[in-house]
Length: 479
Image (tube, rainbow, N blue to C red; front, side, top):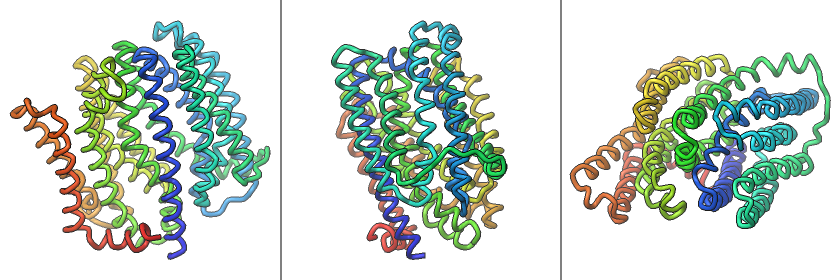
């Protein structure tokens, strides 16, 4: 147990470092690009990236998740997964390339043709690195991942800034994406420490693909239902509105789902190892879940309070409408992060079919709400997605209680503190907006909101989770 804790503690530090560096570099680069090229150009790229993500998940086929989840895996299985990724990468690159004209006609955006044709190359490039990343994560080797990825991201960021100030406009963003994919895949292939070869075995595919397809279908449904916003907004409204929404959505994801991914990447292998012992699994669930809830409550509260200032200072007057989108999206990000944690729990137990069913239920609800509310404005659409995500979270808790053999209240209890604090913050925020509006936009008022959120979080930890924080302090933070 102590060795596992030590491994996870060090991995959490390096995984956090990698994700924080990725966020800071990416955020700075895209912020500079956004100020220079404007919402409409960002909207065009957002449309192209939606379809790129869909083809990427089809290419991966969930094989990297299977490699991490399986307790024992041999070199033939690893090589087969790698080879299949590369073959599928070539196929889906061609499909994406030749669909460029059709997509450009659908959205009535001629420039989209060339954007898609260049971005399609990313799919093939990334296919060479997916398995290497999975192996690094499986063996908690996040330090090497940091040492490989950070220099690449910095170099590509410098290239993008140089291009945008040299007059390349929207193409600086496109070349930034392609160059980063090429350099990162090359570096991982050469320096990850894993000698992966081209090899294809039907027997290995029979072992890997069933669970991989379940994981892939889940991720594909998640991505499609999340990114269908972009398709609908781009088609129903315009690319400028899409650009405004996309920038708010990127900031939201960076403060919620991205941080959730950090923790999930580290704890997924650990929960997978503990899945054979229901007692150890339940103990880990009870220790980790409360701090998921409280951490993402804090990030949501901070983003809600500072959204106006963030957008104005970072992007300028042209992007100010994004701040209202960002407030509502922050609430969605909080609930989505909890859903990602529960999905990680399901993956770690190998319950791919259950996870897929839960995801289908969530996406159906959210899609129905999306198309029902699209005519009532974008804020109404986001509120509908918040409600749909909350319904999915409650369903996942109900499903998980049977596996953990505990009551519904016991399964939900670790998350209640963050949920209650978020509701109280939104009520307080609303009262201030309606009754003290003259003070609403003052930076001092927003700072007070953040301080209240931090104090409430510390008080809840002290009163209700002192044993959990002591456990984490002894076993993780000090190490």
